[in-house]
Length: 357
Image (cartoon, rainbow, N blue to C red; front, side):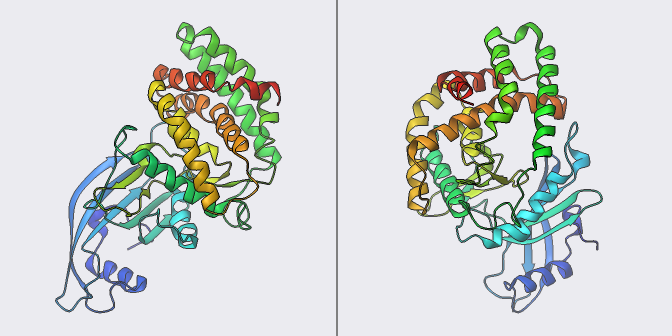
């Protein structure tokens, strides 16, 4: 067997016995069978739930159900960056073990093949106790998601290893390449939208693009930076079904990176929520997030700074998500997503930040 598991059929009892022994969860006994319960395809991956059988003398705490995610850039649409699947491997192998907070699912094994970009992640299956819910009005889930993000961000807030051996900050040259790519992609996106692009939205892009170098100054400040999930829509949270005090888990860590915390907040609220729901929930959730940062030990970060980082992220993240999806995955322009993000830009008076950039 190679370093990377390509599918559930490759998880043998012998291999899994060795993995669980190495992790210290199978001190005695051995695995006798591994039975795929269900397998489905997701974006650039296949995911399988596995039932595990053991000898009678096996350790009582050994996991009976596992979750396998096998990823390959070859499965993704468009021009998906193969390095992204490798980032999830790095997260589970090197980053997650450093964190004291329980917002990541226990990982038993992770493998990566740099040449192809293929990876596998073997996790505890929490489907009996946790479930996803994309509806922001699903009782208490938004608050739980915000608490998880505040905990994540507070842990990594200005951490001495951030941007050094935990992620890296872009160089000036890389930022310049990013600004040029954003400009080229956005101009082509606007052309593809044609008359469907409202004049006000076109004007927003035309005002944001030349401001990108100045707007990035906040990200290069060296202060009040953290590690973000990078794809924090509600579908990437698993919420406890019943137990109070149980952790809320974040999943799908392909896009984690060091930056400002507002990135995750904008992705969650301003990128996909219906504007009426966002307007209703946004003020309270932002205050809750800020209180969570303070409770997590963050100091010297004022409420106004937190609010402006959120608005800045709406400019740099939300309004460009429709562009990136069109440019990278060759999908049709998503006019509804564009309306949602541009409405957030207008509601939050983000143009004020352009005036001072």
